[in-house]
Length: 148
Image 1 (cartoon, rainbow, N blue to C red):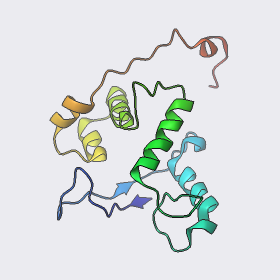
Image 2 (cartoon, rainbow, N blue to C red):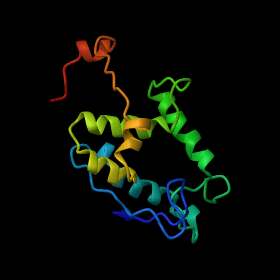
Image 3 (cartoon, rainbow, N blue to C red):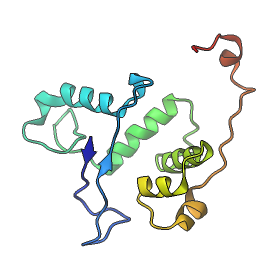
Image 4 (cartoon, rainbow, N blue to C red):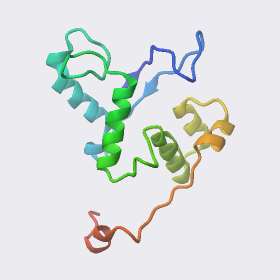
């Protein structure tokens, strides 16, 4: 799926716009597939949409939601996932995902292209964070058999 961002963003300027976002299916686990989730969301909100083209809409008075609403939704998911939202917020997802991608061997050029950065210095200075995986604290993972 290809998504086009029509509004100006922090990293865009008039005449210099963001490239289309390309989303591929994640066939390893469909519950984590962004396309499957998108299709399900659009199906469930179809009767509320009328002619609305924005992806995210409110359900009470169907209209496009604001950035602050999306930030609140992300924060709620982070909190329910066990992430300390006193230390981390919605914007932390950007550095966590790109740092994890680098840690898994993804090339810096691919990360920069995906994030819309022109300079590797931006990633190194502001987003490349140390990812700490605390395997000692997850009791359930230690005692339950793995799914593989």
